[in-house]
Image (tube, rainbow, N blue to C red; front, side, top):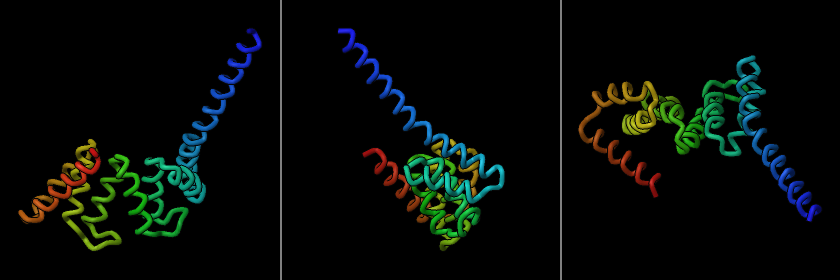
Length: 164
């Protein structure tokens, strides 16, 4: 009986150790990316954020989007920036939603699209992003009724898609 208890405790301890080993590098990679960026090591930041972003980490996806938008540690690529922002936004990252609103409102690497911009600003505002409601309201004043209706339909479709 004592051997069985020792075996169960050993197996549990090993499982606990391995689970910590699996989780810690995820956050360590993100933290290392932030530290590298803060030190001006954009190549290192890009490496760390890429590793995490490819594993599905929304915060790393957003930060990697920033690096691609600015060309820091990676070759500037606005399409890649948009791709990473979209992945993060689809996981609920409000900063990525706001970034997409900015991209479409200002036509950064895309044709300006105020309907798409409104949509992303609204979603970011619903996620409590501090500047999104102001940007959305400013944009709404420049939109026609049909554009505003199209944006609200798009938002409704997006919200419904996330519910199912």
